[in-house]
Amino acid sequence: MIKFEHVSKVYGNGTRGLDDVNLEIQDGEFVAIIGLSGAGKSTLIRTINKMIDVTDGSLTVDGVDVSTLKGGALRKFRRKIGMVFQSFNLVTKISVINNVLTARAAEMSFLRVLFGLYKKADKIKALEALDKVGILDKAYIRADQLSGGQQQRVALARTLAQDPEVILADEPVAALDPVMAEAVMNDFKRINKELGITVLINIHHVDLALQYADRVLGIRAGKIVYDGPASEITEETLQQIYGRKLTDDEFMKEKK
Amino acid sequence: MFDDLLHVFVPRTYKLPNGKVVKEKVNKTPYLVILVILMIIGCCRIAKVDFGLLIKRGHFFFDMLSKMFPCNWEYWPLMKKAMLDTIIMSLLGSVVGCLIGLPVSFYISTNFKIPKWITVSSRVFLTLFRTLPIMVFACFFQLLFGMGTFTGTMAITVFTFTICTKMMYEYIETVDMGAYEAIQSTGASRPKCIWTAIWPQVKGYYFSTVLLTLESNVKSASILGYVGAGGIGIVLDSQLSLRKYANLGLVVLVMTVTVVALEFLARYGRRKLSDV
Image (cartoon, rainbow over all chains, first blue to last red; front, side, top):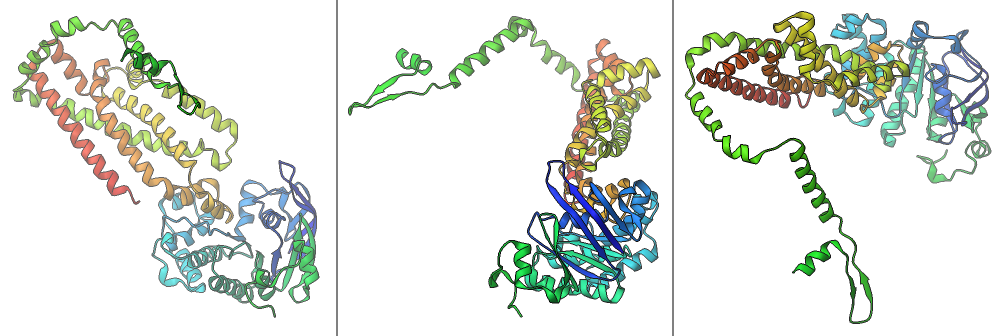
C-alpha cells in the first residue's frame, strides 16, 4: 500500500510540484493520473521511488517511510518498484535481451555485471518477460532497430524482469501512435490483472485513462482535485482538472 | 593606386549622383594582417631567428642526410631491443593509463550526482597534471625509479591517464541519461548503472581514445630515452653524439616505419570500432 500524508514538494526554484497531497493506493490497483503538463504528475510518480525527494509530509510504501531511505536500503526498496518512461530509456546500443537483463543488475554482484555474467535463471526470466509483452522473437536485435511501440514493450519487459510489486509509468504512450498506444495499454492492463501488480500511470490521453484505469487521479497545480473511479468522471470534473472544457477532437476516439 | 591602398584603411564617403551619401564601413582585416606580420617579425627577433645562419649552414643538413642513407643494416641487431622496448613501453603505458582513466573519468563527470567537491577537486588536480609535458614526467620518474624502461612506461601511463580522463569525462557528459535513470529506478547501485547504461554508449569513443593515445605515445616514447627513460631515444642520442650517421639512418628509418605502421593499424582499428 502506498500512502501519501500531507505530502508537498517544492523545487529549488520555488515551483510547487506537489501541494498537500493525501492519497492511499491499495495493492493491485490500476490508477491513472491525469492533468496538464507541469501539474505535478511526474513529480507524484517519482516521489514514490524517491527519484525525487519530498520536502514535506510523509510518504509510506508498505509501512516504510520513503524519505528515511538511503544508500543500500533505498536501492533494495527500488527493486520492487518498476518504472516505465515516456522516451523508453533503453540502452539503444545493446540488444533487446541485454536491455531486459539490466533489470537484474541490481541483484547481482558487481563482478557479474562487469563481465555480463547473467545467470541462466535471469536469462530465462528476461525471455519470459519479453514473451509476456509479445516480442520474444526480437530478443537478439539491437534495441534501436525496433519501432517506438516495440521499444516501449522492451521497457515494459525490463520492468517485469525486475519482479516488481508496483509499476510506475510516466507517460508511457505519449510517444506512440494510437494503435501502438492501445496495444501497450493492453499490456499494462493484462499485467495488472494477471500478475496483480499495482500500476500507476501518468497519461495525457483522457479516453485511454477512462478506458483502462479502475481509478483516476486528477491533479492540478500540485493538488489532487479528483480521486475516484474512472466511471464517475464527468465533463465537469475534467473541466476542473484541465481548467477548461475538452473538445471532442481532443479525444483519440469517439466519446462513449 | 596609392589612393586606393590608403582607403583600404581609411573609410571613404561616397556621394551618389542623386545626392545620397553612403559611408563605407571600416574593414578590420587589413589591420589584422599587419598586426600578424608585425608579431611574426617581433617573435623572430626575440627567438633570435637568423636567416643568414640558415642560408650559411642549411646545406649541411643534406650532407647529413647523404651520410645517413644508405644506412648501416648491420646495426639492426644492436638496436632492435631498444625499438621493441619503445613499442612495448607505449603499448603498456597507453593501455594501463586508459584502464585506470576509465573509472576515474566516470567519477569526475557531473552527470551522476557525485558530490561536487569530489568532481571539482579531482578536475583541478588533473588539470594541474595535464599542464606537464611527458618529458617532465619522465625526468621526475627517472629520479624516482632510475634509468630504464620502467621509468618510460610510468611516464607514458601517467601522461595517458591525464589525457584519457579529460577526453572521456567531456564525452560522458554528453550521453543520454534516460537509460541510466531507468536502471537506477530498478535499485541498481551507481557503478552498476554506469556499467550497464553508460558504458555501452561511450565504449566506441573509449576504444578510439585508447588507439589515439597509443599512436601519439609511440612518437613521444621514441625521445623519452634522451632523459634516461628507456627505448630508442637512448640509441638516437648516443649515435648522434658519436656522429655515426649510417647507424642513425637506420634508427630514423625504423622509427618512421613503426610510427606509420601503427598509425595505419590504429586508423584501421578505429574504423572497425566506429559502430560499436
